[in-house]
Image (spheres, rainbow, N blue to C red):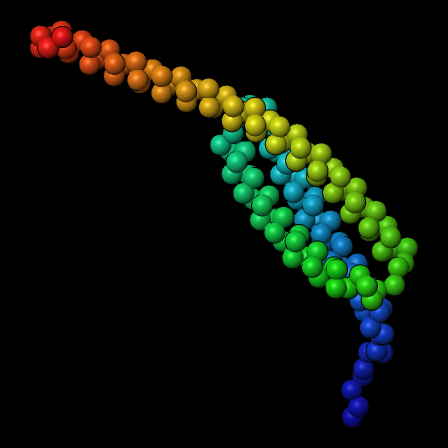
Length: 147
């Protein structure tokens, strides 16, 4: 008995379908990253740099996945014909990229502000410790009569 076979699609039609799938996957990764970036903005509004930094690690993982997708997309783009759905996906992809870039800029700016605040606090603590150490040494010198 002959097996039912699917009609063979041309390589370019198959590439087009694969490319649409890769674009859709990249869009979903971007949406996830945008969601995390919005969460970071909310957390940073409460001046919680540590939690925002943990979320940033998740963003880095998503960016690495997108780099991998980009390499696959590059290989397929050359052989895939352009179609209306593909153009629409590309447009949506670029809109998501722009939104993510803008959020990334804002998150980066807020994280720099908080880092600066942390640095000021650290400097104050270090100065306080040095002052206490100096005063303790000075005070003990009077007690032992070694001045």
